[in-house]
Length: 184
Image (cartoon, rainbow, N blue to C red; front, side, top):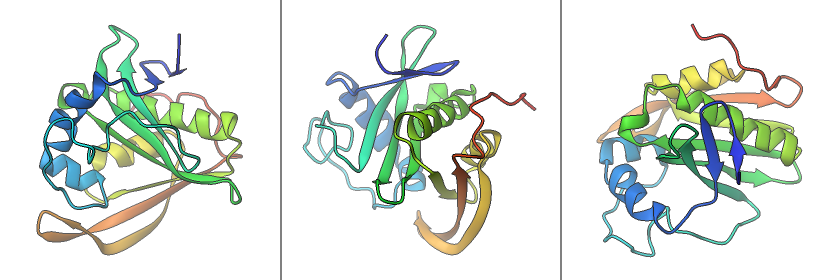
């Protein structure tokens, strides 16, 4: 086993074979891309250096993972701990799942595995999630993992021609239990 495991997913290093799938199914799904990225969507050719899914050397301020299912070792999406600040011992969570893997409980498992990595492996004090107020799946996953809603930034996101509210959620190391909460 390589990578970090949860109950449903494993987070592992990106492989060259992951990039074309993630480009086609995450980058090119424009409505999903613009909901989960602060950068505007721009088209690029398969294999382009502009791809955020290419295999890259680790960087001190981010940790990028490929999400695979434990049952079947299927490529489900991507996840990251980004904006890592070693002085403040903080970072941010991001994730995107391919369409066939949404609504199956994988998102909450990814959030929990990233929290384990951040708090236990990296020794972080605080992890934050920023998401659109309309992203019910991410809000649910964050809150089930123990994150608390801290703020709403009114009309701070630009999504498909409209301004949208963004929600900030935070979790401190002392609040994180690492345990799975009952579904419900």
